[in-house]
Length: 474
Ligand SMILES: [Fe+2]
Ligand SMILES: [Fe+2]
Image: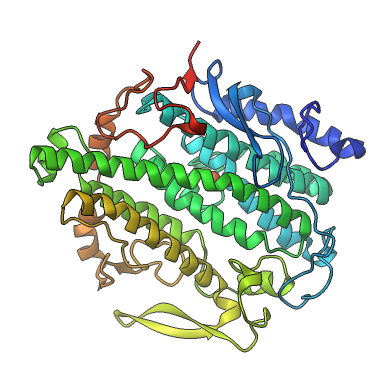
């Protein structure tokens, strides 16, 4: 169980290591300063019906109650240690899992942890003003739940930095509070985390697509031979599941509302849908294209010697590594990646070890396809012909083999000029963003009421009714 009497709630026996405890207690006020500065705008006095982790056991780990967000108990929670756990892949396969950082892997491990840690506060920064245009109290509460948990994910990575990386780790932990999403001089590390999240459609797309990248990265790190990293990522994954739920159901509820408006009024033309105050399916497709493509970039280069060395070293595994039925060394295996050669997209077999980013991206795409299929059931049920589709993997990519190429959503290699000429058909234009934001000019805060562009959820949070007062403004 987690001790909430401690200044920093934890299940890592923090009180036993005074130096570490003092270092983290020193970081804590800097974290709170960051939260007041960059966390949800205007939320300081709100009472929010939030869940707080009370144990790391899979069942009943959370407790729900009203909390003022600055008083949320951010803490350090690791899955319990399995004393028999081993390094399960790479050159060190079969060794007991490392409880300390092996000296030779110190710098790549620090890099991995910092890169993951940086995404957590970044998304809070990206989402900070959305509360001002919430479609309901239910959605506002979900936004804040995601935000406090991303804050806790930052704590999870900062604990590892402080505990295992000495002075370098403490400096990195400070830098994590100094970078800012989208800042020209000191941006967040990864591209998608510097994009704005300007409206609620973007927020739901982000939590569906980009938080799911988080899931796959955490799954790969949960296989790590460095046991404390594996254990912390396992627990983060239980929180991540809720973020993806918010995204998937959020987009689905927008689609359902649009379908209702279309069938009730017998309209199909996007301008008619817009005139009725709903978001047309064509615009939803453009948002999907944007968030999918920028998130695919997060997986990194298609062929990567870094990915190979992380794997061989035992630092970062594959998705569900221990369930894959091969030798977990990958010396003799290959994998298919795509390349643009002379105006066409061709397949190339490369050593499986170098293609691990691509493999993780493919595992991710597989799960995304299932989610988009569930979204499309709304149109099926409504008897509408429109279907959302995923664009080609090479569409609108800035990292990997497709960077610098101009690929249509159908996978056609185009000239830059022709591609740019069609850009606004495929990706949200300034006027699309302006339209979506025009629907979200104010917030809906009456319990049980929802903005016109989104339908109500099927059920409330923690078995509460949909018209429950999820946020009290005071
Ligand atoms: Fe996270
Ligand atoms: Fe998340």
